[in-house]
Length: 271
Image (cartoon, rainbow, N blue to C red; front, top):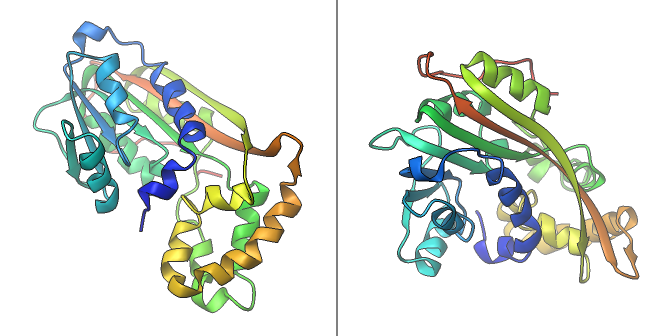
């Protein structure tokens, strides 16, 4: 389903949250020997973890065969594994686990957060970031078109998100209850300045629009033709490009030394 080339078209804007996330992991670089990037995509960000922790073995995992193939082609020296975050396990506990813009796609993602925390050694770190833009015009417009009379029978079901992310406070509360002794959780709204024709449509084509286009096949362009003017109405092009606000939620946590491996990160239901 995933198209690495389309995803990388906005690589600069998609990369910044990754570096903002990793920059808050306060671990002694000399203590890092094993790192995993869960949901590594095409691997262009994963390889930077080896620069940050040069003494570590870094593994990237993803459920998309296309993404793993691209990572292996672009970064042949890396350890790239086709695997699912819900079942993958390393041979030994990890020092750092990073998951960037992935968990929002995973059913029961709180259980997965707890599982990933359990893969980290006591004193190690888990860091994750999830888009939290479901209430934005782009996502609402996409969902409304998918549920419209002409499309609802074919893709209306794809407009229903199975997972909704929580607020930073909710994740922080859950991580502390799961035995973390240090938690840093926050949210940021990035205002991207996008260039080109229909740039918001182009952005969505690499993420939230992908399941619909995959399902529609040759009718995907017709759907995009209807979607494009609706998005332009919400995101008009100005003299310097198209402003596209995008909210994301972050959490960085150190696993404590006095608790068993958590099975889940408890918390209230995501809004």
